[in-house]
Length: 375
Image (cartoon, rainbow, N blue to C red; front, side, top):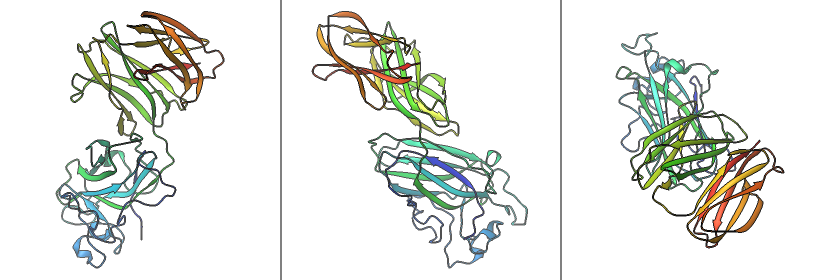
């Protein structure tokens, strides 16, 4: 089969697999619309025994091949397939694409002026949009093999979705019947690592909420956005921070100066340079709570880490320092009286990197992990 199209998308953390088997069914459209006609999304794909006049081969759209079958994505035709996945690994979706070259009356050289596609991955059970990226003709080289576009994101290790749905739809309002041609779609295990969020914390203090998070790897990361909600359903933006792009971990902090009274819910969204994004789980902070609280300062240390315990009662607490892999480096139990107690830990023997201070009560009903960075 002759390949004449190009574009690539990469996404991460759907399943673990020991090989690079393509999970896409009927990837080259040789079986017509089989496996692509679900959910009411009707593709424009012919079959191997159809004629070129049925608009199924490359030459029907202005391409060079009279035998290669392709799919055209237009305002009236889209592509959709449901894929069974597991959590915990990276996947890469790739495909070939180009704009139609004989739009309008079908004459040679009549190019589609403004074609584009949206590629979206959605959880079948949860409805969560794990990735959604627009590709426009103006910023993608649709012909030739020199341009590669990547899209990176991840899912939780134990997501609610055993299946995801891949949707490819038209954007940019091209002329009816004229759009983008797709061929040779694949989904395989990828070695590309997504941004790995180690922790995300929200701590209420003095009518504000201190938010902090840490990553241990960032690939193509662009910025982070923090969202707040008073009901855990409808979220609004609190603030945005540019990503450092560091491969060895970064610590971020942001203060919500105007939280709601009572419980506030927070979510973190990471967006990469292609526009793809992923979201964290929800954390909460209660401005009316009188529960145990933990603070550290500074968040970037050299030889000493100071931490503060605010507790309404006297009790024993386990204090542990660990690296981002979970390896314990300092683990001890101390008695803390009611009220505010300040302690310190010697960090001079720690190598440069990102670490976690975790405080747990004796019944394991309270556990708080706070990140800090050793220079």
